[in-house]
Image 1 (tube, one colour):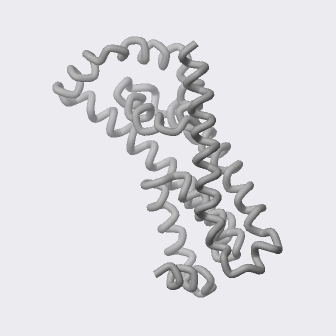
Image 2 (tube, helix red, strand yellow):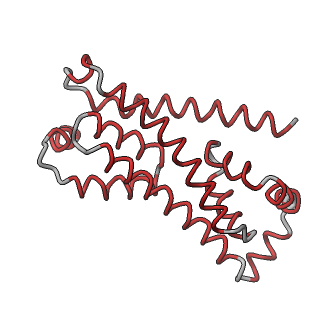
Length: 194
């Protein structure tokens, strides 16, 4: 199966449209994997850079808006409202969102594990959708641009292009990204707990 995937990606006749749709769908499951995969595909010439970046961006932005919408619709369910309002730290978190909304939305993008809860809570708190989407777009552009750029540049190195194991860049990049994410999370949470 791995050889089939590798030969399909090496085949230049694979439809860019299908790769584009695949990147969008992959971003709904694992955003970082979608960014790494798109960068590798673009660095190998299997997908234009603009299409790869657009696929990442559309997938991540629509996924974040869906989480916001989920939180917003949760406000209408009485059982959800009661459960959330009775949570021990709800009022502290709400106050934090209201006083430092842009900073919190921006940091949620970079701290792994906070995206689903943070963006759903943003909808539940009925943060202004324009402000939410603006902060998410800027943070997504920064995060995706940096990660994509690093992987793309590394993926175009001559010694890597000449090998048959180019696909190994994806798991190694993910491991590196996982390490960076853990470091960011640990550093952020240490700063919050002080």
